[in-house]
Length: 67
Image 1 (spheres, rainbow, N blue to C red):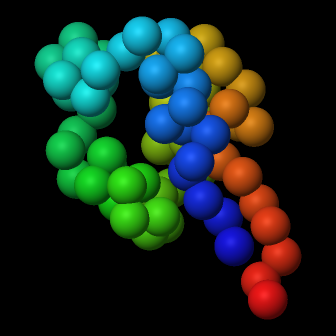
Image 2 (tube, rainbow, N blue to C red):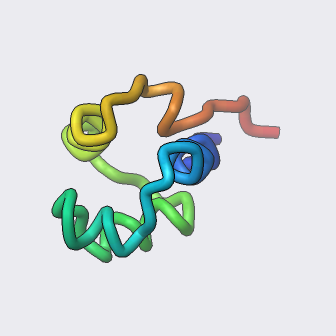
């Protein structure tokens, strides 16, 4: 299973609010909603997140085997 738990921790550590993500970084509400629900997003989106937040992919997603 892939989760976005690290993403929420990363933005908290960087002191970036969801409001800021939408209005300053150009994230869509739909993308944030999908990530909140651990739904899939494209690799392009993950790439954009890493570039905009200047972080590594491990700071955005976490993989753990399905049970």
